[in-house]
Length: 212
Image (tube, rainbow, N blue to C red):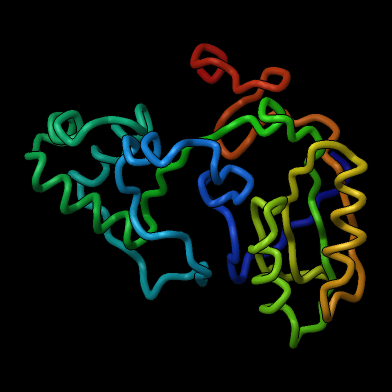
């Protein structure tokens, strides 16, 4: 390790869960989406700081441990792990989700869907246009994550394109035309080793054995 830079995320405009990525819209039929059930309100722009700390109970800790082991655990399974009832666990889990203590995610391998060019976009934007640029990025199908950050670049985004030529066209024609954009650094990812919580094996998610 020779150097490292760290920045604070100040406002999130897009990202956090795979189904928010606009490129995935239409991948499933309405019937298939209905089978997945409700997953809460759609993503909205939000600050990253809550009003105050959330105090976790011993029961909460057991619920979180069970979810960490299996994010698809049923309420009955969670109740068994916490020594509680499904109804009580359901109510407590709803609170933890609303307070953003719990984040249930599904990770995908974009390359397996044909998106082979991933890049981090570092944008320097006029301060008065940061919100507008962030909201514009959130509407772009290629953008999977966008946030306002501290540091020399005040907006960071993650783009997924099918190849480098598509990435070039996207960044030069559409991102480059955003009002208030002063400069941009495009950093393609050469090898993707790990996502938010999952290791990758080539273009696929690694199996459970590799994660252990």
